[in-house]
Length: 162
Image 1: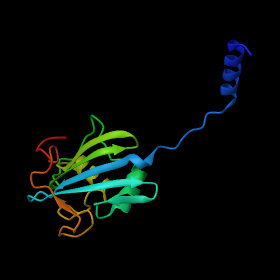
Image 2 (image 1 turned 90 degrees about the vertical axis):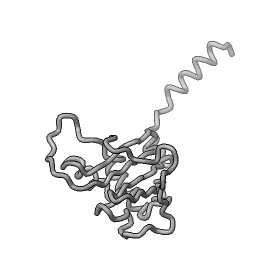
Image 3 (image 1 turned 180 degrees about the vertical axis):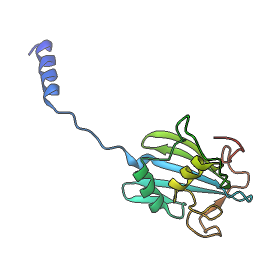
């Protein structure tokens, strides 16, 4: 069989095989959630979301992963030009970094106005539902809770950063 015939046969077989859509690879959904409670407490949690639920040091890993799947990932900023109420909801800040659905994530959250407070609320239980309370609902750190005193390089939340 000539090389041309082999190539033609290969191309015709390739064209006969239908394309199959693969579901997103959820094994790589890994996030670090850093929460500044506004009173000097800085907490850091690891969150891994796979097909079997959630794992990591986050106190409600399963609930957080379920919420993120429903949202399609972390809630992004309000669209440019959105009018937000100027209602200050508290000094709490958070940062969510890692990879979701194969894309890098580095989002910052605060409660400085109505839009930001709504983003924070929509992220519960990834972020604490009640500011000043850990994502798991308690006020004291859990045994697998890491308080970042100075933290690793980049594991801090700068005032005014988004």
